[in-house]
Image (cartoon, rainbow, N blue to C red; front, side):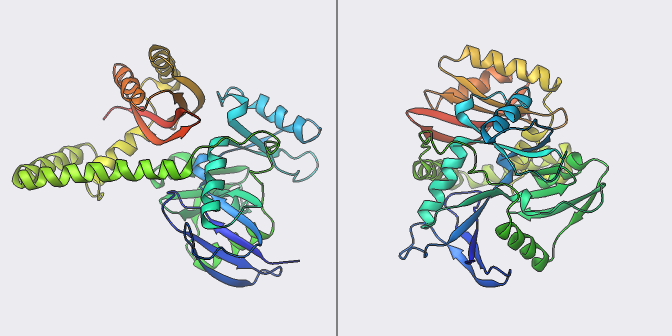
Length: 368
């Protein structure tokens, strides 16, 4: 057997990617960081890439016997009420059986995201043979009431018995319920989990039956450039405003922090109180529940010409997320205006240019 390279895909395309080279016996032969557009490309090697799990939905389903295509179709049918998405935009992956009469591990992810991650790895000079979400690098705990937790960037990967999800830290207690959270903070323990995932991944998101279909190009580099432009422009505007009237800006900032502190004292301690408030509102259960929020979203989509709803993810105690395709970047402003009439706010998590149309991943929550 030959060594395996394990690469951790970051949440943002401009960031570098940590990697390890693992020997067949589990020993670490090399570790370091891969950067986009390297001067010298890394050597060819079996590569297992770990992607952000927040963008992957995991379920355990009782599926009938069948071939790979039949299992994927059966899983997609079972999840039809949870995932409102066109078949050509979503990859459904069924893991190998864990044992006789055991539910099958099923993962669902957008094909656009799969292509984006592949584009990022290509920019690093590597190609993934296996792609696994971060929460599935953890093994199931021995106790039914325990949940293992490991931080990946700003999110927390959680793994319990037939339970796997990656969420923001402030949602952990809400998601795990009465189960005990066992945080893995020892770097050696986390590294051993990653090594085991590299040697024997729980699932391969690339094994989704889509290799025969034409790939969906999402323009990772273009999206990264647009994201950088969107980040830089507001900073320049804020700097200019501060130069013109620094004292007024300070008073406004202090007033805003005081208002946020009245809503949530813990939010005021965040380095970006306004952003923390928006994130909590986006992740909180929408007013009126999921049914009312879905109805408002459908009405808003129908009212904006050219907007199509590609996917909808919702849970009673969690926020609502959706993927929309639309002709113009300004369509999201009109959609947010319409959702405001129902007391809801639209937060854009990612926006990409895909084949002449704009694809937006959004969260729907209470308007602050």
